[in-house]
Amino acid sequence: MKSKLNTDYKIFWLGQAVSQLGSSMTSLALTFWTYQQTNSAMTVSFMSFCNYLPYILVSIFGGTFIDRSSKKNILIISDTIAAICTISILFSLFRGSLALTQIYIVNAVIGFMNAFQSPASAVVTGQLITDGNYEKASGLNSFSSNLIMVTAPVLSGTLVGFFGIRLVLAIDLLTFTFCMITLFLVSPRENSGTSKTHHTHAGGKNREHIEFLKKEPGILYLMLSLALINFFSRLTYENILNPMILARSGGNAGVFGLVNSMMGAGGIIGGIIVASGKKTKSPRKMIYLSAGISFLLGDLTMGAGRNVFAWSLAGIFASLPIPFIMAGQNALLYRIVPENIQGRIFAIRNGIQYSTVPVGLLLGGYLADYVFEPFMASDYNAAIFLQSIVGKGTGSGMAVMFLCTGLLGALSSAFGYRNRSVRNLTRSI
Image 1 (spheres, helix red, strand yellow):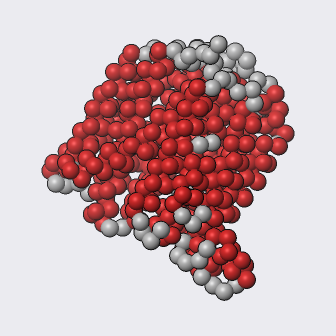
Image 2 (spheres, one colour):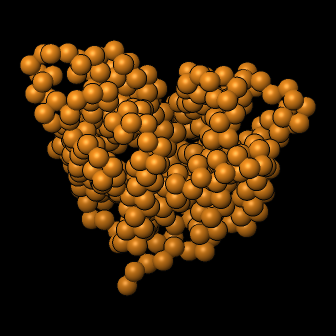
Image 3 (cartoon, one colour):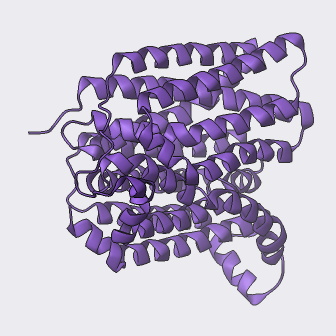
């Protein structure tokens, strides 16, 4: 008999999903506004940088505070501060005084608060899952996040185009209100501050998570291997995919939109499959085989493809396995990590796994513009051979980058799957 998620978790999930939709719409609206004001891609990239940097730095050190504090209060405070930031932007817009500096500061503040909000939300999720089917909850989260990825650009772009950015910000505040209501309706249990399986004296509590990672090195290796996977992903999909599609389609906005929609659709389908499935018997396979499939079928097809059908199929291949990766990782962490140190472990996980994102974003653009595109425009024998696979012209260098990340990402997934520490980790659940 299939287990069902309890009502408290469904309420919590719905509130978080609605809030994320509002936040995503605001982020996109601010991106539109910034680009219109400056006509500079660098300013938009710096917005993301201001968000990521404090998130990564604080994630490394904020876990102890999360474990010692009420997770529900952390969520309420972090969401409230984010709402205040939105109000400040809305107020500046009405006064006609909104400046880029304010947006950068707001993004940094939100990144700072997300470093607490994200692991706290992860812990609350574990507390609200009464049947232990963490994969189902992870699938539901993947479904909502990918649905937001598809719908937020359409909603935000339409509203900004017809009514202006102020309405988007007002809707964001309404989603915040809804999220607050759902948080007050649920009652996650707060741990007692002591581990059932890892007892330490009072003076050693600050090192509980360090001792745990030493005892379970597979957890740390899991984080490091997924950081490497994130790095390869950021080199291409979240960096040069859009420029490549535009370059190879002759700037066709319809093709650009369809390929991105197919990626979101793949994630939605994967989330539904995971959410409707049973507990996995092998989280290790769920993580690394799914990652390998994503790289091999997604990246290689995207690089070798030369039309909208191939690119759309590649988008589905790449994104459909992602919810399985997330579900497998969450299953391992929730079942192995003691609840009283989950905040620290999830915070460290976020810090490690996302530390490669800024590097991947910056390096991917550099390699595309100054290495691969010039190389594919040359008459080297290797370039001529690769042209027979990916084609010629602008964008072919970026296509070769997809071939590279497909192979390197699949190899990194295979090494992770065969790692002895990870194998030992999965045998204990």
